[in-house]
Length: 497
Image (tube, rainbow, N blue to C red; front, side, top):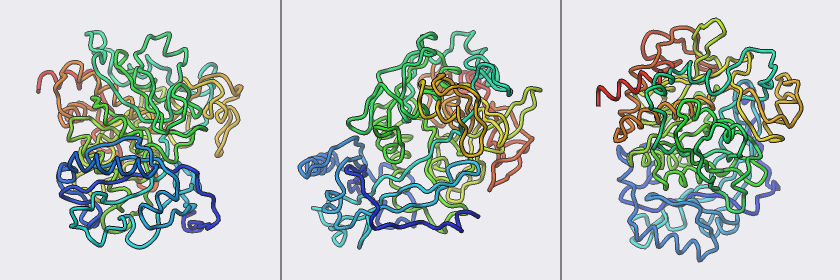
């Protein structure tokens, strides 16, 4: 495999950014850093810090020059210089180029920042773990995440290949029209979406969709722009299924639209808003097959934030991945969204682009839980979606990258035809919004049950390499429970809960 031919590159002279995003865990009764091999406690509440300890740590960090980006009952996302992190931890901030599977057949070197040194990721006080004065439990720097969309792709107008148009094609194939006709359209449900941002595209204005003023995770970035285009595109999938839902976009990219560091802070911002749903079209990366034992402390600390959000009654959705293996979609009670392809003849089959596998760490967990719509590997780019004119997505799709063909259009047309499991996550979020419109008090587990029990069983195809699990009757390792049927899920929720 390519990853074995090209090992990680460590460059001691690699420049460190002026500002770095990190996560500071505040000690509660339990510590995720004491023995990470044990994994996570059954409940995230065991790790909750005392409010006064959160306040003390926050105040001390601000006095040291850190900027608090977001906070929870577990810890804080902070922005600071490398020297500040080094003084806090006694370690050394270092940049390492690691080969990462970013989707399909593509492997890229991605810069990872880490704090190295004795006792990391714990602080200098780790030798006194039971000291009452030790409030900071551990410090980690954010790991880069990858979008779960594959691009470039052909322009929607006059596209030579078969593709789906929003909102109607998506609504029909995901079974949402019956609910719409009954007046169930996602009203009174807010969906938070940490992504690359959101742009006021004419498509959203013409359809009179409900979008709150975008927020930013990284200070100084513009909330009204989306240089990458990914968040703008994926948000259209929500409204195709739930046209009356309310979207809260949260931009997690830097000034040029890079998503390396920022998604975790954006997730914490979303969590603090207490929305009904948080949808995430991005995940991390772990080599497959994974190392033995539990995931590392970096992944576990974020997993704990996700687990805590679910316990607070928020439905958390993550894309399953485009051939990647990651922790986020495996976390118990996360709704992971995989992919099903419906061709022009109406044949349904598992997308061989979408990740599908049984969890290596959590018994009984299958990724994905259910599926949205996704194209096939090497096949047509599948979903026509709006993007900011001249954005990175718009430009890349016009010239073709990573072996894909150009879409034969200019670089400022404002539309692109995309694929991957990025669209599937917000589609599933839209279906969940319909359920909550009909039954507002449902818990995340009940929403997942309604979507799972009513999904269309998929028996053809297989999941992406390197997994290659076949689809089959009932719950399978390629498509989970199958393709969502939004209206049937609403009816199930109304009659069973």
